[in-house]
Amino acid sequence: MIRFENVSKHYSGNVTAVDSLDLTIREGEFLVLIGPSGCGKTTTLKMINRLIPLSEGTLWINGKKISEYDIHELRWNIGYVLQQIALFPHMTIEENISIVPELRKWERSRISRRVDELLEMVGLEPAEYRSRKPAELSGGQQQRIGVIRALASDPEIILMDEPFSALDPLSREKLQNDLLELQNRIKKTIVFVTHDIQEALKLGDRICLMNEGRIEQLDTPQGFLEHPANDFVRQFVGGASRQSMFSGNLTLEEILRASGRAEVHADLTGAGAIAGIPASAAVVSADTTLEDALELLAANDIITVEKDGEILGSITRQSLLQFMSERVKAGAVQ
Image 1 (cartoon, helix red, strand yellow):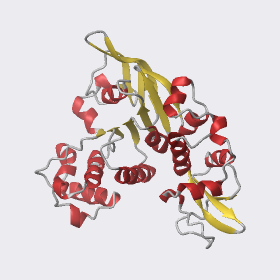
Image 2: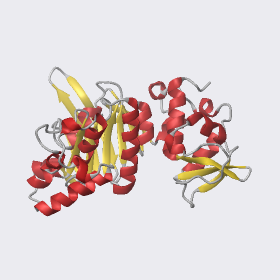
Image 3: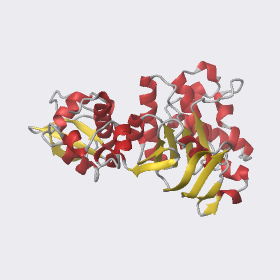
Image 4: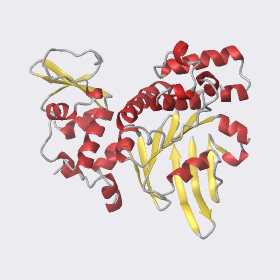
């Protein structure tokens, strides 16, 4: 889908922002670029839609060099979401969402249907929000509009540059969950820049950790937690090794009690089945260990936790990886 082939970006003064990058981003993948300030992650993102030109190498999208695309054609097929939402304050929400479809000369009726569809997709009632101005919305609601505006013309690729970092923790977590749910439905190719390892572990199908313009490790969230490639990666993720992560033989019951996260769907009252857990979810014992649960979640999106014939709750891949990353960041792992 997107392929960097020996791509570099140099600036005057002998500064190299990206150094001989080789990276392939798969169609429908959620790839997170992460690393310390100045590592090249935002430069890498902006080279995809030619906001920053390459100095060396070749960048391909769908087998075609980006230099061969008409710049408008390229950018119309790439949605872009910034930390600074940049909604036009004098325009209504409908007008903000409609900008790119209008540039592409969609029919008015088609644009109107698309606006309603997108607002409903992020839980905003069209009749209530379509005619509002950005100043009438909360920060979280404005950021939702920023996300769906990037989706308005149904692009194949979405670029997101630290889109949630300015939000309060509750709004940020809610939007992370909304984005995961949305991606499960739309299956876009998303390239997401963040400086937050917890956010990366929660959202990414794969994570690309960069340092000084080069890739230190490209792996799944589980791979980062279990098999950090070197000391830099280990320190960035939080110093967790596979052995320390699994020390104490945490069970799923203990994880459910400690987590208290919305994705876990657990009240631990032993009152029986809990609404919202799919009937197809694999059922496992409450004394299943964390290590075994990771293996199970490699093959199942969700597992149901059972004890003495009663349902305690359920755990998803995202909620378990988020729990692990929070323990690492909080220093809870011994």
